[in-house]
Length: 75
Image 1 (cartoon, helix red, strand yellow):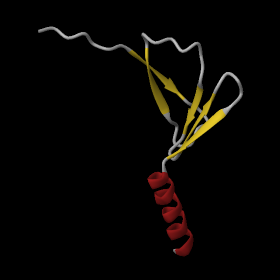
Image 2 (tube, rainbow, N blue to C red; image 1 turned 180 degrees about the vertical axis):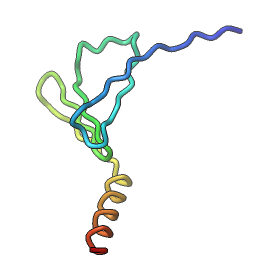
Image 3 (cartoon, rainbow, N blue to C red; image 1 turned 60 degrees about the vertical axis):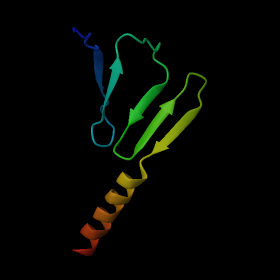
């Protein structure tokens, strides 16, 4: 049985924390909205009407803060 391979586009997000990349399906045009900026612990979606949605990765944020505190304490 043959399966259809899904096509996608990979967008690099320069200037974001961790150099995030977003994979978007090619067959679903978004018209450029929402604009998505993704970092290691925070994703920001900006919609055409100017509203924004913040999506936090709490586990990753806690890990980064713990590493920063440990790094500071070791100096």
